[in-house]
Length: 188
Image (cartoon, rainbow, N blue to C red):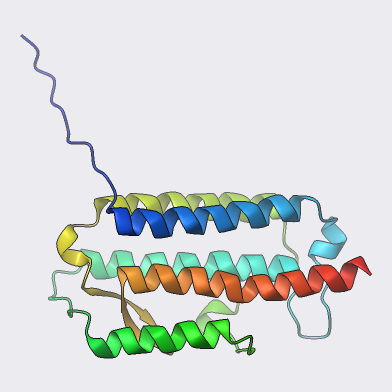
């Protein structure tokens, strides 16, 4: 007679999985494109006080790390979590519109501390680790948490997990415009 204990296999919510897989597809495409860049171009600043391509990528990783940390702290607390409301949905839509507008924004101080030089392999490893943690968190997230506010964006306020994943993708897309512009400038 077997005494083996089987743990249930967890599956990610399909809505979250779809968003996660799109994030991964975008990230992998960017990293593949950046492998072709010379390290001097990766770390070349377009102007005084402006971020290089490498610094933008480091910022993307940093934002995801900070977002994950916030959500993990929220989930560990025993406090009652706020139900996502119409106000949260409107703020999420405004955030989406702002990030998609092409306007430039100053990064909040907590997410603006990027290294002077970036090593692509190091950033890739950090991003891999962050995404593994995100995947685990999304897989383990109880269904009751889907409509709870789990992340506080510095400007848009509280967001649900689906709104947060949308923010991460929109933030990525916003910075992809900058990366593509810089790649064009340095290839001339």
